[in-house]
Length: 148
Image (cartoon, rainbow, N blue to C red):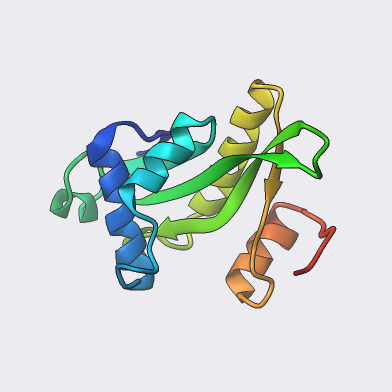
C-alpha cells in the first residue's frame, strides 16, 4: 500500500537526499543537501513522499523512507507578488517502484495541496528526457508556456 504525504523530520529529509543520490548518482557538490529540503518546506514549499508500507523492497530501508519524492519551492511570479509553488525538476523514484504511476500521483498531490492553500502551482520538466516529457505532456495534460 502506497501512502502519499508530506515528509517530516530530519530522517525523512535525509532519506530524500539518499534517494536523490540513489536515483541520479550525484556527487556531493551537485546534490541538494538535507537543509535544502528542510528550507523548502519551512518557507512554504513542499516535500512530498510516497511511502510503501507493504513492499518487500521496503524491508531493506527504514519505514520512514520514501520510495519516491517530489519537491516544490515557493516563488514569486513575474514580480507581480503573486505566489506560486514551483515544482523543481526533482522527482526521484527507487527502481523497484518505477512505472506504477506514482510520479503522476505525486504531481497531482503537489497541485492539490497548493490549491488547498490558494496558491498557483507550476511544473518544470526537461522535454529532452522522454519519460519526463511523456508524464508531463501526455499523462498530466500540461502545456508549455516557455522553453529555456
